[in-house]
Length: 319
Ligand code: ADP
Image (cartoon, rainbow, N blue to C red):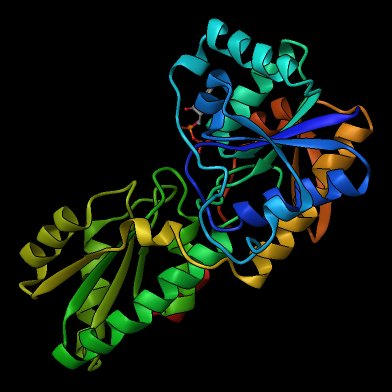
């Protein structure tokens, strides 16, 4: 393999830039040519492709977002769209592609691989919802952002003796809520994998009040309910003034943590090694601090699970 490409796709996450940098630098170190594909699969079909040099990825290791931009494309889900993409890759002499993105982006990469174009996937999403890796690129940074917000909300919640619902990202995966809730000392954590019983949530608020707690913090994953609807339920049941804070897109941004930069660099480096070794259709991850890779099929067939013991611990610690 002489020439590879790299793109970022789907939802952006902090650390994607560090991963792009690792792919580009590792490739050039090993005398490969490397092209950046801009705006994900949409840009691939449109031919937004530029050769990258060592300097193209200078000064980006610490920046959130993605310098290659990202996009979503319905057209790429069709065979015609994928063929358009492959034509563009061939036109530029690109022989292998690193795709940095979430589950949907992996499906696109799997399709290209099935059509004979070798792709390697890197897990770029803040949700931590990809199997075959303990952590996804950006999860750790998002967690720090959420904890920072919880700490600040805790100050005002204590001063005003209020109940606060903090709605965090996570449509199907509760990792952000679970980890941030545990790290932020939330009284209650509500995640899609487990759901909630209203009487339990209310019971916890009331027992906290009885022993003199001045405030309650509930961390809610967006996939379960909107914070506003949930607050109405709590107010109805407790008659307590309940405030909502929806953290939204701030969770996607910001300077990647050292952990995410190291993870991105290691995963990006391995992606290039796999392509140089003639591998295709593999997703790279980190398990127990070792870099591993699985076929896309394996990743799709292993359900991402939350650690239920962590959930139980959070309940034990927040009595
Ligand atoms: P993420 O990668 O963050 O999960 P999406 O689910 O939006 O984000 O996927 C990103 C892009 O990947 C989609 O816009 C689409 O172009 C491509 N994609 C998603 N699913 C498929 C599929 N089944 N086949 C081909 N391409 C897909």
